Length: 248
Image 1 (spheres, rainbow, N blue to C red):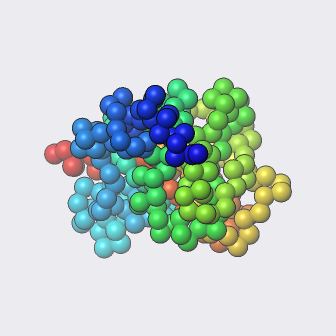
Image 2: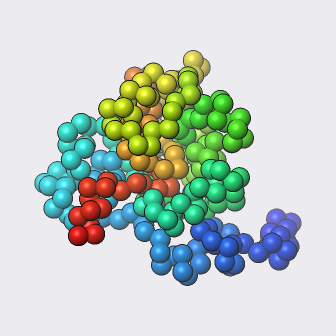
């Protein structure tokens, strides 16, 4: 009955492109135009935080970005499907702010490609948490929806509410790294009954900007006994210093 129901639904409401309203054959696909404009994250990239590098030599012999060389993050590896540009925004912002949860399946499939090694090695998928105030306003945590869908695709267990935000934090956009870290200090915690001891955890989120939030989540879980924490996101904001080099 499910294939028949899907056929009837697609007949009445045909699936549209992940990034626009163009009809496509299957849910979760790009149209030709948006596929050509999508910037998938690929090598060269920082082997630690996954930020795209303008050329292989930019990471030096260690293949790390300057930020990871200066201060190693708490997480071991971070990977993302897309650069956070206009095409990625057309997929992610409607999910976050306009209840377009139909994008979750397609985004999870995109995340699975660069994240397959991390997904296969993970003992537990954990989404970045939202504060209760923001969760009530939005009605769902987009990171949790992505984690649940990835768990369905891979069979990995998911701890939907293992992490909590103790207090509401101000938007981090526009803050420097020190201010971001200060704003998040003590804001994220483990649930009292949460258990990550000995586990290799994969943290899931929609967008990674500076990595400050992911780093704080990883730090908390490592202190609680996690063996290792990696990160997988739908999109990654490029380092503006490298973007300037790439455009020069």
